[in-house]
Every structure is written in C-alpha cells, then in structure tokens.
Length: 135
Image (cartoon, rainbow, N blue to C red; front, side, top):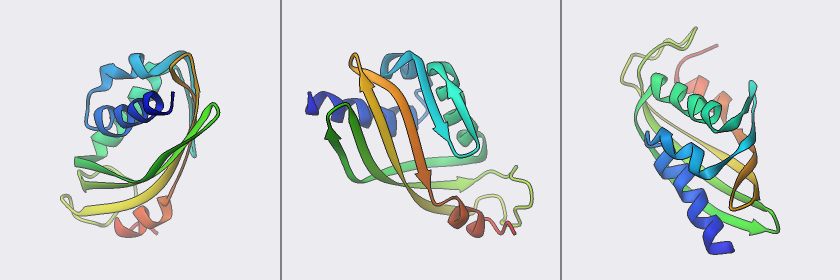
C-alpha cells in the first residue's frame, strides 16, 4: 500500500501541479475536502480549480519533493518546494512580471479507497508574499 500512496502523491505533486488537471478525478474521491489556508474546496473539480488558480498567477511551475511522502496508516505527508515565474495579478505585489519565486510547504493527506479523501496544506505564504513585494 505504501508504494501505491507514494505513486498517488507523486501524481498530485508532479502531474496535477504540472497542469494535468483532469487527473484530479483519478486521485481524489468525489467527496474530497481540501483545506487551504484561505478556503476549503470540495470534490476533485474544485481541487483542480484551486491548482489552476496558481497556474493563472505563475508560469514555469516546478515542484521539488524534498521529503516523503511518509505514510502512516491512512495518512501521508510530504515536504515540497514550489518554483515559478510570477505572471502578475496578486493585489499589492510590486515584483515585476517574470520574477522567479520559490517557497516551501507541507502536505498531509488522508487516503481511502486508493484515493485522496482529505487534504491539509501548510506553506510559507509570508515568504512568497515577501518575494513578491507585498506588504
């Protein structure tokens, strides 16, 4: 089961975040709940939309898996680093379009029926905003 969850997580981090939004229905259950700091999303389509919003703000997205995924029972966790080029559109940002940014975060997933059921993310949003000149 650990290798299946490892593969599932890599599909999330590398395939979905690289723009293959259709795989959300393959890797998330229909009743998936994602807890982002600013909102909750429900279902695989809203999860894909949340990732799509990041693509609207950043191009050349590349995620690096720093640690994990670590699997314990029905949970898996990982640490990642996001890299992307700013496209513009964040209120208060003074960084020019094209500014390359990087920030790290952690994912925790609850897994059931071979797919993701629930998700929590913690990331260095303050570090990202600082790189973009916000505040």
